[in-house]
Image (cartoon, rainbow over all chains, first blue to last red; front, side, top):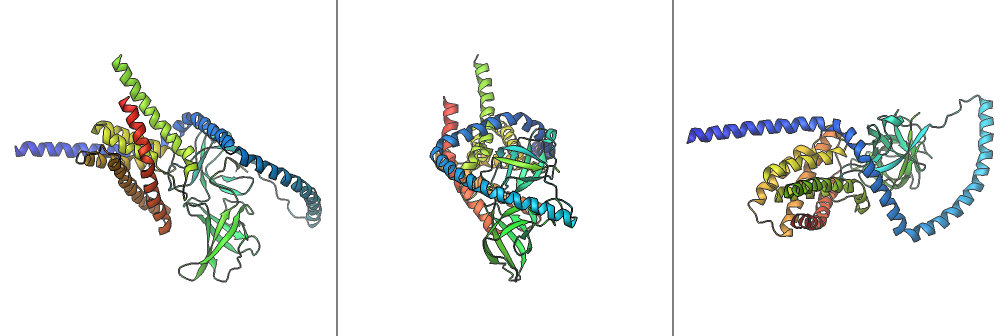
Length: 261
Length: 165
């Protein structure tokens, strides 16, 4: 009986070993299947996103109406302001020419729609409806009309995953626009971001604008990140940190622009 | 005909699992509270581990883990081995405790979500090579576990309706 029992245990152990090996191999090869499966799933994802968008429009009809009126007034005001700015811009161009400064080129971008979001609370990402067939590559910077959004983390043929600014894996070299004080902006998995490694005597104030500093080669200089809403001192007492409210509402973003060059 | 009906029901069930996973990455985003959302895929894992036999539960746990890994960005599909482990744990526990009451099932969901978040925390801490602030960890660990537990009875009802019809 003992021999039989030992044989049974041995067989169970071998089965367990083979099963564990199978799971391990599966864990390694599954990421390779993401691209084709997401290619198939992009249609139902698009449909679900569209339905959700339409439902939101109906549910928040009154809010949208009030907002529309407010924005129409704002557009009129901004139009007037734009005329003045165009004048300043042309003057700036003329002066730059006189000083022989290299003219900065505007970014070449691709617009994409958000069709999915992160699967759990431990990451902050979006899935967009543009992929490698449209020229999207891993590492490209993603922005919106309001400011920096994140960067491309994974690309498939027709979709791509964007890691948002508030993901824990994100770190962007940034600076305070007013004082040129540099720091590192990273995600906190909450709507706000944190700017760290600021010297104790750094010149940072509430409502200061934070932009990319260009020190991280991936991110072009001058992209708007957000505004300072809180300033604090690190536990060590050697440096300060500040909480930043992103310029882009990362939780409700629907369209993004990918800088391709 | 009965065989065909059974097969259709199986396909329909797999389709429902996929739809729930799609819901997880689309509509559930608007239900975020303190930047935390319930994990419906984990609730499904608990349900299949309670109601199905061991082999079926194991296969479905791999399928659910695959669905969750599909929408993530990790280089290794970590949810598959974790889901298999949780499925085994729930299966063994559910054979020792009477799980007919929703309260017990919800307790299982809480326990599994709690354990899953702890493991995820250690994995992420290891991957990003930086200490995740403790308040972020606690916020996700506690709030997500409670939130998922509170939402889970809705899925229990849906599951029951589907299988007892």
